[in-house]
Length: 291
Image (cartoon, rainbow, N blue to C red; front, side, top):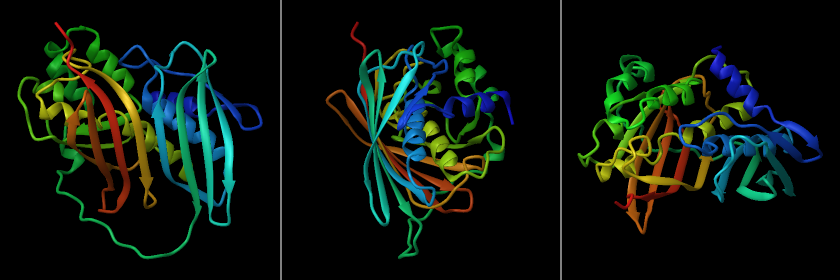
């Protein structure tokens, strides 16, 4: 296991300070606020720790309310909304400086057999044939206005082996493309056999690239280039089938719409053997800076 992954696992191992109340810390991010995927993953950890052991997470719905302060702890308060015979529902509010910064609702279900069908996995190259983030990012160092950006991006993604199928937005800024993006990802090291941990890790990664397809449609390079400003507004995930976040997962993303200063990204996450594991939808604030 890499040191970066070990550090991320520590980040997700929340401190319980009272019944149904947990506290987490933050790590550095590319932008001067708490990374949205971190808050979502930590909130799901808090919800999962109050759910019965025989129930796995099957969906989450969340809103990002305020930018998080990376220098302050985050307190997660869990409401036990319902414990039914098959489903458990939890609501989590993340608080900093006395104000809510994030709200999540999550549902957990007892495993059961039922009807089963899925879409066909899209074509994608073998992830082992693609360049790693460490190999790819230095090629585009001249695209960033901040000379430290390559190092900051590498640090932010050090726990995850994330490989772009096509060039990322910052590589083709100024050239509108089809609003679609694919990346393969897995953690840099093996994880424990805890289904909640794998779900939370996928939640963490899901916020890294989902709005890329919005940027591609308009030839924008993104926040690291400085030709847009924005933030995640809301996030929803449905966990369909078991998967491991330490094995290759294909994140197939597209944007059906952008308007009103907001862009919508939707995606499916597939296991390497073709199983549809997760569906993700996110709306983000995407604004072009004024001169």
